[in-house]
Image (tube, rainbow, N blue to C red):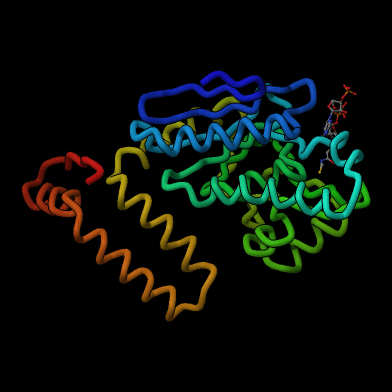
Length: 261
Ligand code: COA
């Protein structure tokens, strides 16, 4: 499908989703969020896609947040709550997608942009990127999951520091506190993201999907329940052809040919 504010390109079994509205630093307006939701649904259905990279057009911004014009125009408390819930639901879809999603943060990841990156599985930042939750400067709070995912990633104190001051931090500082997982020179960002995506895409797809699910579900519950959940997922993976293929290939000293079955 063709989209107005988002480009979707393919490199083998990797899909690269680029927010393409650099004039407003790829800010997420209502139309772009509608497109993002459709893109995610499309890629979810497409069995030839094994891994997804999200990035922004231009060198300046990944995503500079929700559209501040739309935030200004919110007419009531109920409309505000709907605005937040809609965005949260789209980000939940990304977080719970069976395919891993890598954020290639090529510049500003602010507000909704930082929240979007946090809903992804792995975050790689260009060394000039800047991240933050500046909503406090607009008289509002994060509404696309920022008050929840940020403390889970970096701890309550650091989350409060970032959210209550609205300070932007460098990619290196984000790496230090665990907000991003890797920092690379800007020129190498897409190569690094693609290389990682290809490596993941070469693995057994059901094992990738169920490992992701086990980590996501387990990290929101207590350890005993989480391990019981892991055991169920392990049981399911033992029922796959790829488990036979992976273990047999190792014993026969040959590369495995995974089928996603
Ligand atoms: N919503 C709507 N428009 C935005 C935007 C957003 N979140 N972020 C940037 N833009 C627009 C600017 O209004 C400007 O438009 P204009 O050219 O019509 O004036 C254009 O994008 C370029 O931004 P500008 O501010 O001129 O770039 P800069 O390099 O001086 O500053 C930032 C970059 C990211 C520091 C600055 O744009 C900014 O603070 N943006 C808002 C970030 C934010 O608060 N996000 C959270 C929203 S919940």
